[in-house]
Structures are given as C-alpha cells and as structure tokens.
Length: 622
Figure (tube, rainbow, N blue to C red):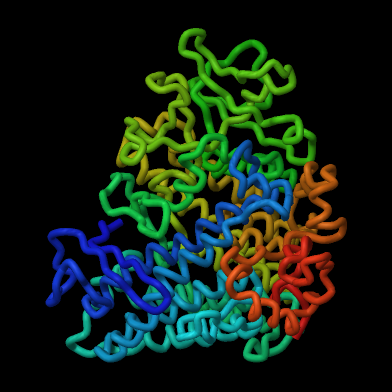
C-alpha cells in the first residue's frame, strides 16, 4: 500500500487537515499551521477516504461474521456476544457509523463539488461510490439511517427508511458508472493520483460498481419478482450487471497491505498504523479472539460428505508448531515433516463455551510442550485447538509473521490464518463472489448446468486467489514455506477437489452454493447478510446449527426469543441519545417496529428485541 501523505480529519460540516512533512500532494498557499478545507485537493481527500471506507466495512465484519457459526472465541466482548447470539451484548455500532460518517462522509460534498468544478469526473464518481457503499452498509446493519439530510445543516437529521436508502444507493452507483465513463477535462488530476486500490483504472472501477449493484439487487430475493426500480427482485438485471462486472481475478478490487509500522496513524480513534489490515487490528493481533468452529472445519475437510479435503483448509485453519506424542488424537492433521499440527474445530453446539473452553494453549520452555493452565481435566485437552493469532514483523516487531506464544521460543509458533494477518488482503469485490451470485440466480431459474458452471468457477477463482497470496507471502519470506498455512497449494490437490469434492451439476443444491459462498466471503458482513436472507435455514448452510449457549441461556432469550434470529444492530449510542425524536418518528414507517415489546422505556428502538426486527430487504414488505 502507498504510504499516506496526509491525514484528513473532518466533522460533518467542516474539515481540518493535518499534514505530514515533505509531500508534494498539496499546494499549501495558506499558513501551514492553520490549514483549511480549501487546501485539500480532491486526490488527497480520496486517499484517506479509501482507508476509512474499507475500515468502516471491515471493522463491523469482525463482529458480524461471528453470528454465522463459523468462528469461536474465548475473549472479545463484541465477538463473544455475536457468537452466542447474546443480542443484549455489545457490537461495533459506533465504529460502523463514526468511521464512515466522519472521515468519509464529511469529505463527500467537497470531493464531489470540487471534482465536478474541475471536470475531474472520475473523482466525482468516487464520491458517488463512497456514499453508495457506505450508506448501503449502514442500512444493512441498522435498517434506517439519516440519508437525505446526512450532510446538510441539520444538527439532528431526519431518518430515511431502509427502502429509501437502498434505492438512493442504487441511483448513486448508477451515477458513479456514468461518471467513470466520461472523459476528464485535460487539466483535471488523473484518478491514479489518489487511487490506492485500482491505480486509476476506471475499467476496474466500472466493473466493481456493476458487481456491487448485482450484489445489492440480489439482496432483494425475498421481494416479489419485478423491476428493481420498484424495489422488486430482478433476476435479469442482476445477470446483466454481472455480465459487466469482473470476468476473472484480474478484475478484482483488492487492497494489499503492508506491515511496516509506519508513522502515519489512524486519527479516528485507535491511533494505529494505517498500512495493515483492519481485521488484523480487530482479530489477528489479539489473544484467543479466533478459533474455527467444527461446522467450518467440517465444510473445509469433508464438504458435503464427499471425502475430499479442500486445499484451502490448510490456509483457513490455524497451525501450531508441535511434536507428535503417543496420545495425540488420530484426527489431527500433521505436516509431512511432522513439525506442525493443525487445529481441530470447536463444536459450538456443545457446552464447551459454557464450560470455559476453548481454554487458551500456552507453551512452556522449561518443560517443552503445549499445555492449558487449568485444573479442569476437560479443559486440559483444549490444546487440540489452535487460535488464529498472527505475528507481525513491523507493528509487532517479530522476525516473521508467525506468532510465538512464548517469546523467544520458535517451538511455540502458531501460524495465524489467511484473513487476519497484518498483510492479509482486503477484498472489496471479487470475481469469485460474482460467480456465486450468478450461480444462485441461475439455480433459482432452474438452469442447473449453467448454475453449476458458475459455482465451480467461483470456487476455482477463490482457490487461485488464495494461492496467489500464499505465493506472495513465501516470496517475501522464503522461511514461511515450511509452514502449511503459507505453503502454496499443489495443482493436483486443486484439481482433485474441483473434480471430486464439490459435487456435480446433477446433485447441485442451494445449500452447496450458499455454503461455498460463505467460505469465499469469509469475514465480511455479506456472510451475515446471506444468513438473514435465507432465514438461517440449515438446509442452505451445511452443518450449521444454533449455538448451544443461546439455546441454553435464558437471559439471551430476552433479546432473541425462540423462533427469532439476529436481524439488525441496535443504533449507535449517540443516535439514541441525541437524535431521539427523529429515530422514534421513523418507527411509524417500519413494519413491525411498533409491535415490539417496549416495557417502561416506551420507545421501539429501545426494545429488548430490537435486534430481531428485519431490515427492509430482509422481508417481503413493499
């Protein structure tokens, strides 16, 4: 990733600029100690808007992924609450709103207006893209948000319905496509000056916009068939958008990160280097924040009972450096040299979480070996689980990306996992996901052969993407090749899985499509969105069941009674504290809002069951 040359700090109505030294991105004609909004070029604004735009999406994803039963955790209030369906617990609502509305949203009017004034139509297109992407994410999480008045003069902006926000975002993405297709004025700054993601390639941006439009229109699968312009499920429009979206991995929009511990830090609240991935910040750098579940483990090692291991399994399931003993469980996989063992999956349908597991493994250098520091016999065996914590050479100061559970002992190394390393790629939009959307729509149309071809192509594309990243990692540090988490996949294993492990056109089901899609879009809000869209139907998510902790903890039923599911997030605290009149008023336009039990508080948005209320696209309402 490029090093950022300036930091934009902004409110909803004003922008202040903090500059780093020795940069030629800005022509500062005023006092450098008192810069103004006018000092920031649109290319400079866009750099940090890209950073915060993806952070505002990925930080919530570090929570929402846990609703889906693929991940387990020992710690982290946001993650444990989501994993257990404790909807009265915490989420990242403030992060989701703040990180978009302030550094991205606060710059949107100036970015658009200054770009249009200069004929820099590609930057104006980016403003439309940012607004559409950001507000669609907020609507997916919260249902209703201020949209029309979000960046105006209103101190307490009025709320829009989920449908209004959705349709507004579709219009914005269409406007972005039109602007990207224009030729800029000769004196306008080229998009490449501010574009960290696609290097100014408008062709890739247009494909991303069509991809996002297809993704969003497919969210309407519960609606009646008809034109998307009327808020209906429009399969023809989805397929048309996909024909103009990515056609190979070369068309993907991917953010590649660095682990150099740069002096340029995030100023939105965490004061961390901006170069590494957001998931590393939320998950990868933290102890015991991520274990894989048995459901996820089984789908990677024996998908649909076909008996063929997915070659991505070694990259998505963490490993620990270890020595095999006589009482090592037979089901544990070892590397060919016998120096690494792979984690087993945590069964969230059992009482392991309520009994204090999975207990974190430690490593003793005095008495070599892995152990759990507990007198509970049941928990002493939790060494079979390996957490997904990642090492870091820059921010963490380690000698490689392996995490040493005991400093100074290479024998205590664990691998981390593909998505949560400091240099893990952030996928904004991928050909693999586009293929799975296509497979779903074609399967709904009864075109099984065509659906299977898209399904297979999506799996293949994701495998190749993951493998290319593994090759990049071992090229940067050849010592990592000995760890199976980094070792590039063998073509024979890839071919065997595609030919024998994913089924055929004759036995394709929606469950296979959606389960494989969960693997492809792992650690994104799209995982949770699909679970909601499909009403948490276990036929569509192979091996998934409700978590034991939810089923057996009475207090959790207060927030999510039997027969209901996690459907949205509670509004951010400052909305409930300072925008109460408008928030309460929108309840008149939200089906089911006034039917929620409100108790003594009397406000629909303060109901204990607010998180079970479907957002607009998650229902058949007009």
